[in-house]
Image 1 (cartoon, helix red, strand yellow):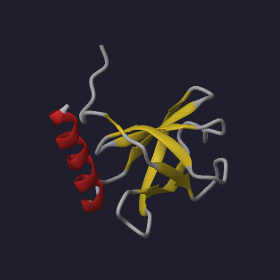
Image 2 (image 1 turned 180 degrees about the vertical axis):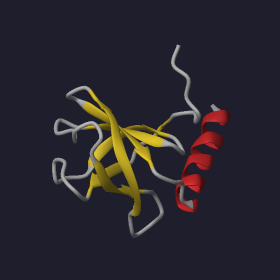
Image 3 (image 1 turned 30 degrees about the horizontal axis):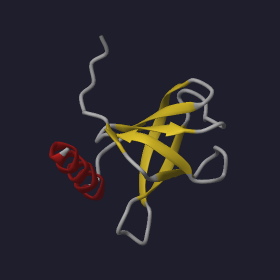
Length: 102
């Protein structure tokens, strides 16, 4: 069974790879403090590093995080973030609280 350091939570946001990818914001399936599952028909190669811009609710400017692609399957890719930012922590915490209410 796969072990993760961070719980993945469903998210309705979009992400954009600054260095490659489709050139358009892609939908996110789920997110954690450690990374994100991106739905895309143009995944970057495993090992590719980029700056990823997350379009979070209630923020005018996207949150930019450096990360690397850790897996792809042709229809999606997994991105591991190099570090956590306070805005990401706040967003994931809010998702955690919302999921606990359901």
